[in-house]
Amino acid sequence: MSERILYSACAEFEAARRLESAPPRAALHGHSFVASACVRVDGAALPAWAPFAGGETDALRERLRAAVAPLDYQLLNEHVTLPSDANLARWIRARLAPAAIERIGVRSTRAQGVDIGAAGPARAWRRYRFEAAHQLPRVAPGHKCGRMHGHGFAVVLHAHDADGAALDAAWAPLHLQLHHGCLNDIAGLDNPTSELIASWIWTRLQPRLASLCRVTVHETATCGAHFDGARYRIWKDLGFDSAVRLAQAPPGDARGRVHGHSYRLRLHLGAPLDTVMGWTIDFGDVKEIFAPVFERLDHQPLHELPGVAAAGALGIARWARAEATAALPQLERIDLLETSGCGVALDWGPEQAALPA
Picture 1 (cartoon, rainbow, N blue to C red):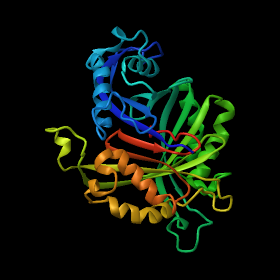
Picture 2: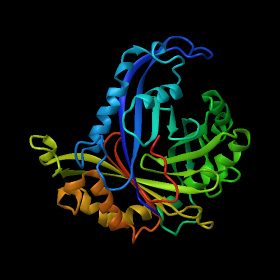
Picture 3: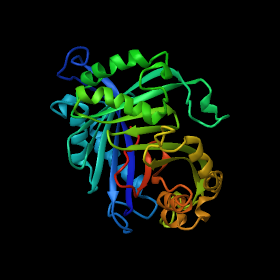
C-alpha cells in the first residue's frame, strides 16, 4: 500500500451563535470552538504553502488561524447564515488556501463536533462516558486484565449528517445498561474487550441509526478501538519529550536551533479479530513490542536520527515506521503530534484511520 502523508493543525476561536433548534440552543449562547484541518501531501515534493521541509505543520496552523480569525469574538450568525458546526466547517474550508484538504473539523464542545472530508456528507460525532467494571476471562494466568477492575470508558458515535439529539436518544438506553455496571454481566459482553464493546454498541445502534458510520471506544486515555461494521482497528498512544533541530530552516529562524517538544505518538493497528481472545492485539503487547523504538525516541536529540533534521516530524514518523513494522506487522499508521492537534500522520493501511475526534 502506498504511503499517504497528512499534515494536521488546529486553531481556537471564541464566538456566540443562535441555532434554529429547540431551546436552549435557539437562544444566544457561545462556545470555545476548535477548528482543525488535515491536508494531504502526495510525493516527496515540498508543498507550495510550506516554507521549508519540517515547517509544514506550523505553516498550516498559521493559515488555519488566519482563516478563522474573522470569526473570533463574533456573532457567527452575521458571517454564516445557519452557523451549525457543519456549516462553520464548510465556511472555513472555503477560506483555507492549501489544496488537497482531506478533512476540516469543528469541535464546539469537548463532547461534540463535526468532520467534513474531501467528498461525501458531513460526519457528526458525539462523545459519551460511562463508568463500569470488567475482566477479560480468556487472558493468560497472571495477566492484570484477568482481574476484576474498572474504567471510565468513553464512547464516540460517528454518523453522517446526523442530528445530535438523534445520537443522544439512540445512546440513552445503552448508557442505562452500561453505566455503573459490570460489563461481564451484560448479555453479549461476557468477554468485554474494547473491540467487542465497540461491535456490541454497533449491533444495537445501527439498525435504528442507519447513518452510523463508526463506533469508537476509549478504554483508557491512551488506548482504544474503532469498529465500522466490518473492520476493527485499535490505537495506542505514547508520549515522549525530546529535542529536535530543523536543518532546512532559513537563517535566523529559531527552528534551526536545537529546541524540543512534548510529542504525542499514536500507533494505529489493524488486524482480523482473534475470535478466541476477542481482540486484534493486546494493548500491552503493542507497548512492549514497541518499547525498543520508544527508548530511542524518548529524551533524545531526534535530529541525530537518519532523515529527521531534514524533514522534522515526517522524518520521525518515517523512522519509527521503518524500525517498528517488522515486529509490529499490524501497524498501519503513525500519528505524531508536536503540539495539541498539530503534527503529521503517515498512513499506509488499506483505508485511512480517522484522526482523533
